[in-house]
Image (cartoon, rainbow, N blue to C red):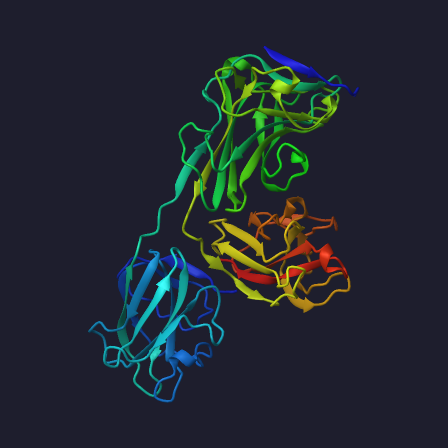
Length: 523
């Protein structure tokens, strides 16, 4: 049995290769920008060979590499090393074996070829003519390692050893968020707002989740730090339509201020899932999977999950959709919004006369306390200072491997409480458009127009930040409705660029600004 709430209206750059096993020889890549650099993780010893390597232009003028009147690193080869601990690493070429090399070694932040003055550490002679680095490490962070010979000495083979100390990187933590005492049984009695022409149209069913209480006192511990939403699971009591299937929007929104303004709150992630015709006897549950996962930064204190049934499911036919619910108990309210019933913001079902409607709507999150990989090369910076007094910065984290489909963009050092969105394109430039206080750094291509993530507007809140997890299989290429395809998948070997535009009324002038930009070579 379902129940209807009557409607009032009628009607670059650096591309990281796959990780290799500890102990496998390095492939001695000659260029720091070469695609497919070896990646080594944590402790291990690896043989390297700079015979026949050339001396690159990067890493040749570091003050910390200055010994015996020279800063250069001869016949240098490169690899990426990723920290498996949060503490300290000693990396050396002191191991016996190989030829009698006079080595030099340097470490730089990974992401792209290093600029002069950015070395984390550099060393020439520490153990005889061999070298040792020692530096603090952040869990999960990567470093670009340069190996080579002292200028004028012989080239050949040697071993490099990494030995870390400190707490090991924690593993990912999965958390099931639920506010239902029983989230596996659907009972009769679901409620929806009915339009006498369209049926159940433009209804949204909501729950609010606060990170301090993912199960509102049931079983899960508080969720701290950044996390990702991977799935939303919800029950369906009744679904009926002329075509036998309805396309339902599942949205993750910022929960700040909920329920006021919830329907216009920033969408952090969205997926459309098919719901096939069903009735209460079938006990139907639907899982919406977010790929890529929806990134939720530590500063976001709550998220709202919206199951939205849009208009136009069955033109001329009354489509029906009633959420799965039961009366066995819940720890927080279930909510409904529907313009046809003048419920413009979500209201608890109890507030419209149905205190026994407790909808089944859960989510699964994944918390990875270790920072994800910083990728790409920043350019077009520093950006022009905004009203916060500093220039805004864009950061890309995740993987350049397209099959991973894990890239998160973060804009930081924004003014507090401003709206913004991200932009993308295949080309780069650095111009001062007359319509902005900032510097514009992107260019569209012949068939790929400038892309705008206009449907993913964020508010920088009290942290001055905004984030977006992008889908590399569907990047916008026509942003502003310029005709033709509006999105496409990125291809291996393509370089794509990203920037963030944001409002900045306190600054005056053109009332808006940009971050710098980041360029990512995908593989």
